[in-house]
Amino acid sequence: MEPASNFSVSKGLTVERIAVPQSPQESQHSDFRAFHDLDVANQLALWGDTERCATFPEAVVFWQGNEYEERQVFLARLGRTVVGSGSLTLPLSENTTTAGLDVQVDAAYRRRGIGTAILETLERTARDRNRVSFDGFCGEPIGPVLAGAPLLDAKSGTGGVPRYAASTQFAVHHGYSLEQVETSSSLHMPVPADVLDGLEAAAVAKSAGYSVVGWEQSCPAEFVDGFARLKSLMSTEVPIAGLGWEGEVWDAARVRQEEATWEAGGIKQIVAAARHEASGRLAGYTVLTHRDRLPGVINQEDTLVDPAHRGHSLGMLLKVANLRRAGLLWPEAMSVMTWNASENQHMLAINIALGFKPSGFEGEWQKRLG
Image 1 (cartoon, rainbow, N blue to C red):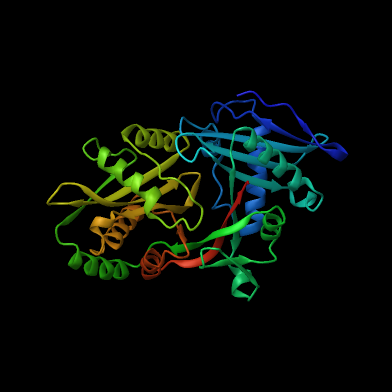
Image 2 (tube, rainbow, N blue to C red):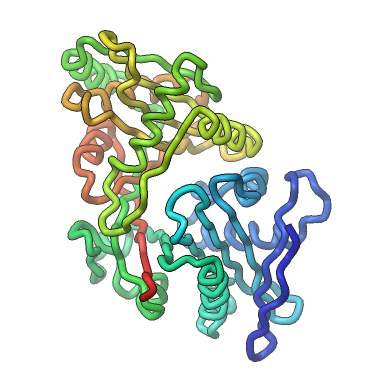
């Protein structure tokens, strides 16, 4: 991928697309390293740690994109000094009228119009690709909310973000509406054995006719088609408020592509799935991921139970099984992080029962043209 021509802005500011390395080992990737380092610095300043950051190898592999999504990265410079970055994701299989946008500015250069210049570049690039709906995500720690900061309510009717946070003011100023809020939560590891035992016993009592199967890294061939079916459901059955995203179509090839991407980026995954004994079909699944370069934290990825199989405590059964395995495989981990739409009260209740505590919020913003 060749960098695009510079977009010149007043007062010597330029915003340009940069190339993504073909591998994390490439020696000539100073531009992309600057892009990654700015993200790490901003996340550290916001959260006090880097647990929400991708590792460098993970970032390289992700931003290369794939047949399902094109991904572009940009740097903003004043002269030779990197002062900001932007990123653009362009779905290629579904949601082909949407674009995902992200803007970051170095803390020392904020409130100078740099973020606006980056956003204008991203929006113009997206419009040139016939995208008419722009999505953005902004995380905020829970501290200000606990302290009573005024909130901007989401259009979903559930949850809000600090009204006077810089990210909120920037999004509103540029015509974005707050469609949905996700709650981020953290679980201390290891979870006490008596807590897991009690929750598991209650779930087992309600889940007769189902068994738990699991795997690491690669889904067994006998389950991959059923797993792909559940991944498709994941894109339609979770709350999306007014975001209007189309469902994704998953097949075995798409599952294998995701597995290969995670492995190339140094991400390890474990999956627990519920098998309906009478039909042999998979009825639900949950995924945890871990990075050796960030050993202290585990990420809770998807959790889904097929609507046809709900009401049997399968979500809890699967989460307990995967947490037990995670404790054995990654004993150095001190926490698990997860995100849930604020209106997804059922899954939030499961997480609360396991011991998750709210740590922050993520606003999901959207701007539609026309």
